[in-house]
Length: 406
Image 1 (cartoon, rainbow, N blue to C red):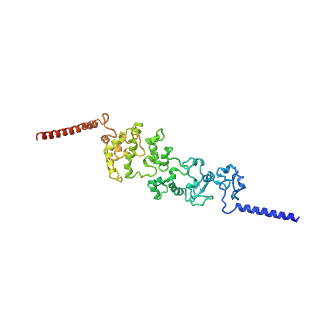
Image 2: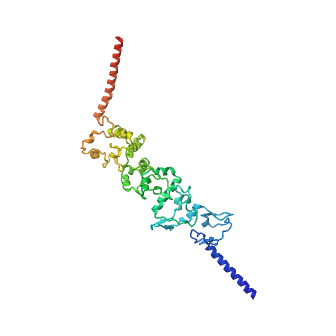
C-alpha cells in the first residue's frame, strides 16, 4: 500500500515537472512568436507553440506539411531553412497587416505576392535587399512619424543599384524642392512604385499619367492636345510624353534660359525627322524655315553667346503652345490665320490683322505660295552669278589687253 502511494506521489511530481517545463518552454524569454496564424496547422503545434518554438528537432526531412513547405525548406540535418523572401511574404500577404504611425496614419504592410513576383525586382531582390534593417522576427521597433516621412527616408536605398539615375536626380528640379524642405517633392517610389515596379514605359501612356499625380492641370492640357489625343492610338510610340521633353531623372526647370534655348532642338528632333514626318504627311521645312528667319537666327545667336541669356525672340512654344499644342488647322490653334494677329501681339503689341502677312510662316516660297518672293529670289539667284561672271570676264580681258600691249 505504501509502495503504491509512493509511486503515485512520484508520478504526480513528474507530471508537475513536465507541466512546469512545458510552460517555461512556451514562455521562454526571447522565444519569437510564430509570425502567422496557426489555424489548421495543428501538426506543427506539436513542436511549435503559438507563443514560441519548443525544443527544435534534429531535422524535418520527412515532414510533408504543405502549408509549411510553401515558406520553409526542410533539411535532413538541420532545422528548416526558410527562404527569406517567402518567409516575409508568409506574413505580409495577410490583408489586415498594418501598423499605426506616430501621426495616427495607418501604414498597410500587405504585399501582393503575385504582383511582386511579376515586378522588375521580383526575381532580383529579396525583401531585405531594401529593408536591410529588418533581419529577424520580431522586427525591431521603429518610430515612423508619417507615411510621407517613411517614403522620403527610404528613397536613398535606390542608389545601391541605380547610382547613375540617382546622381542625375540630384541635379533635378525635384531634388531642389526636396532639399529646400518640400517633402511633397517626388522621390523614386512616387514615380516607379515600391513593391510593384514595372518598366516605366510599358505601357507608354502611363508615363504622363504618372506625372499627372502632381501636375494635374498640365496633364489635362496635354491630354486634350494633338499629342495627348494620339498617345493611345496605333502610332502612340511616335508621340512625345513628358519624359521626352523634360527627361526622366535630371529634370530641369522649364523656366530657365537654357531650357528655352533647348526647346527648339526638342521640337526639331521629331519635326526634322523626314521619315517620321512623312508618316503623318507633315513637312520638315518647319525646322529649316524657322532657323533661317529672324526668330530662329536671333535665338541661335543668343545660344552661341551663352546658355544663361534669355532669348527674347520667339521659340516654337511661343507660337504653338506648350502642353496644349493643336494641329495647325484646328480652330483653336494659335497659328491658324484667323488667330495669328492675337498670337503675334504677345510679343508685338499693337499688331494689326495685316501684321502676320509680312511673315512667310513655315512655307517655302513657290509659284503657289508667296509667288512674288519666289520670283524675286530666283531673279537674284540668276542675276548675281551673271554679274560675278561678267566681272571676272571684264577683269580677264583687262589683264589680257595689258599683257598684249606691254
